[in-house]
Length: 189
Ligand code: ADP
Ligand code: 5GP
Image 1 (cartoon, rainbow, N blue to C red):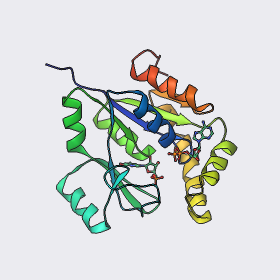
Image 2: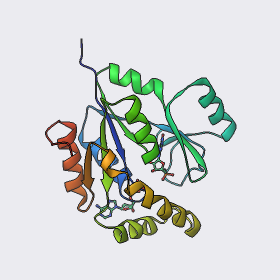
Image 3: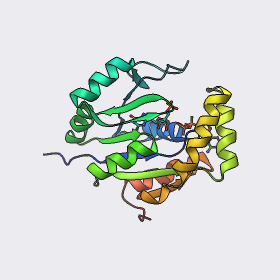
């Protein structure tokens, strides 16, 4: 029988580069699959239903919560985000490594219930760089950016609760660091 895959949880503040790192990892690691989350936030131009997220209205999302469909869910900036459990369990049982790219509240919640996962915090080289990446992405309005900047302070204070911290300064180096962690070749903090 095939060994069970590993659950790899990547989180960190908005704008730190989680999505960019995860896209690169998925291109470079053939045994890695992404868990597609559900959310009530409005789709961005680059979003694709069922690929980047499953887009739900609040009522649909709340029904999924009531049915116990989520491994974890969180409210981030007034929107629901959640990880559907079934696809994650199926893929782990098929021996695939499953990547979750989720917010800090969600990651620490999963860590309580699933301590055998690998928990990686992506940190910015410094807070100014984080804010300029968030502004430079150009996907949020100024009020939304301000909310994400506020949330970042609390999120950054939780980094020591993770197994690993990877600083996303030079992108390819951060990707290589995460690959080493997935292969089990890095020391935990
Ligand atoms: P997150 O998913 O954490 O919210 P993104 O992956 O969307 O963050 O990255 C935010 C912005 O920062 C994007 O415009 C992205 O191109 C840029 N970015 C990500 N990593 C780096 C890096 N190492 N150096 C410079 N810019 C980066
Ligand atoms: P965005 O709106 O930029 O796509 O995502 C906002 C935040 O929600 C990011 O920090 C992202 O990692 C997080 N997120 C995405 N999916 C999930 C999920 O299923 N659960 C949780 N807890 N957070 C998520």
